[in-house]
Length: 227
Ligand SMILES: O=C(O)COP(=O)(O)O
Ligand SMILES: [Mg+2]
Image (cartoon, rainbow, N blue to C red; front, top):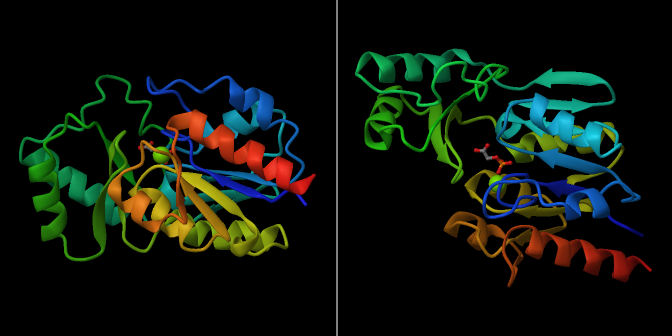
């Protein structure tokens, strides 16, 4: 049987330049099991990806702060503490760094994402001063200021339950520290070759190939195994 998938987006379904790899549109529309997009990006991004793949929209956004399955949205984190940290960071001269409009944060419900150009040392200092409830996660694409009790893994437990599955039924592919909680719960976990140290350590297998080259290899192998 073809297994359900829990797929990270940035660094996993993309090219090295951050574009969605065209093989996503070949391999995923016909995948005959649930596909959960589990991302640090805001809610509309994975919804749009699922929509334009013609798939059911089953998504985890904001590193687990938002989950959507069976037409129901669950907000799984309180934005107050992360927002207060970013406010204090700004008061000390820090900049979120996305420029005017800030579509990165516009639709965020539970956390705040900052550009990698932001002052990381100051951000971590301000977050540490807030006590243990807030953490800074570096995905390689942004710094995320989030509640410590929010994770992609916890959200996957909820989504899997709604699908009458267990997280252990899933195969996960990812590339960064925000995928570690997913890797801990899924039956099989793969880190693409571009993955950071945390994801490499947590994965069952570190792939030889990077970005979608690695992910496509996993998907092809899973399909062959199911035949
Ligand atoms: O938006 C980010 O920072 C990372 O997103 P990802 O979880 O899909 O890799
Ligand atoms: Mg990623």
